[in-house]
Image (cartoon, rainbow, N blue to C red):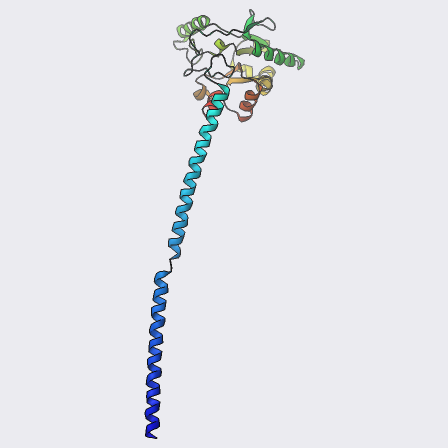
Length: 263
């Protein structure tokens, strides 16, 4: 009986030792797993960083593409070539010194005063527009077309003498669209053939505003764009740029400046 108790005691001691050893192994294993397993926040931070870097690369690529597109547009339309129908003329972009169009033709119909001149392509487009206007019962009269640099100088000097400052009403020589042979001032006998803002209230002014682009003309100095174009609103002043570009400008509601400068 005594020997049995001793044997049982030894078995219990061995069992207890095994239990303690197993417990220690479990704790070590748990601690090991806890240390070696990466935290969720660290993983998310890495993924977030990769997304940011990817986004930066995409933005840089988009900016590069935009610059390429802008360059293609400028190359396509050659807006600094005085002889191009796409030329941009304003206070910052002057025509070449002494520029005179070589393809001017005379226009001698529907005139306010004396015959006027325009470049041949623009004159043909104007004729088509005037024919359709007449078919719609409109009274469209032509006031001013091509002006030489000398004529523009005289007009500008007279404006300065009258108003004290003419730059917002009449362009200085070299910066007037009339010197390109691509611009035309149109009025109506309904307002006494004057060049005034009230022209936009006439049937003629409204028809031109909505249809000129179909013939390649744009309303060059629209309302609420004075700070962009540098000139006051002129509902009578139209500029020939070709049907494709005129239509795009009309549909987007932007000026030549906004188009060439990327809006």
